[in-house]
Image (cartoon, rainbow, N blue to C red):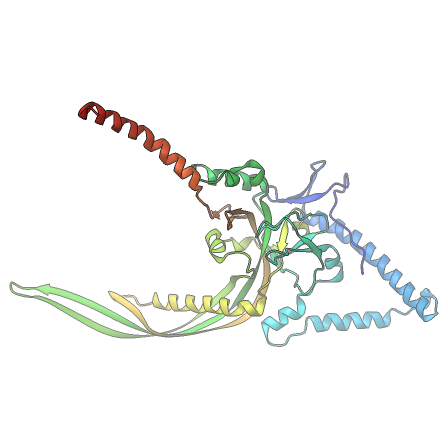
Length: 403
């Protein structure tokens, strides 16, 4: 296995993390900032040296096992085998999903710079770079996470980097809690708010062409009256429509841990800011491993696209007072699929056996959260409001009736 090299500050060897507010990797110790490209160049140079050393060690070991000198080992066969592997990896089958699966595997050097943590409570698998620690699961709050191996997972194609850093997320959460006095204290405690974590949520993005044929029912209604009667005339029309629609990156959440209602609530993302995936965006953040793969999410993407076709066809019924769908037949053919990581700030809280999850779009700042009500605070608030009124009423009754 190749040796690994982590993202460290070129100036002081401190830990680098991606700072979304400035769009650069920043050192936690000396404050130096570097662009993604600068770090990748440095990483590529170090990784190439590490890989070359590892390759030489492997060749020497093989040569020793065969009883020959390392200098006599031919690299022609290895080069031919590698070329064959690369060619097979990018071979086209005609099925865009299968083509994607063939070409999206992690390289050994990529895997060496990642590690995985598994939550024994909810089953979430979290991927991080080699220097980012995981102390609790962002989905269920479990404090026990077990190191594991990164396996059977595809390499992301695209990523939207975090724009809002932790300070901005904490400030947004505090603002969200303001004006809600009935919240339990455990929600608003400063030490709890600081536990918020940045997570890259897995998404599958499907592109393709949709075709639709539909029959619409149109109606125009005219009403008039005379001195004695009111008349209504309804004209019925049968409308036939057909059309083609191009879809670019239909998103489907590949995580069963992230509630769909939360994910829908913090959308949309600006997909124009998608960039090629790089490990440089990972330091300081978690990335969840998808548990719904590209084939499992295909029906959901297809259903979403076909519903959009039907909605757009219905909009073509102009010139009629009422239009509804008689029948619609839509079909979608995918031409491309991509795996993307989208940024979310998350905080999990458990209150009286019920899970509550706060989520914030790490790109736009849009947020949503489940909030419980502390019944003890409700009771105390009611007493504080009602008791003075009860005293006033009692005094008034005493003076009026002499009790």
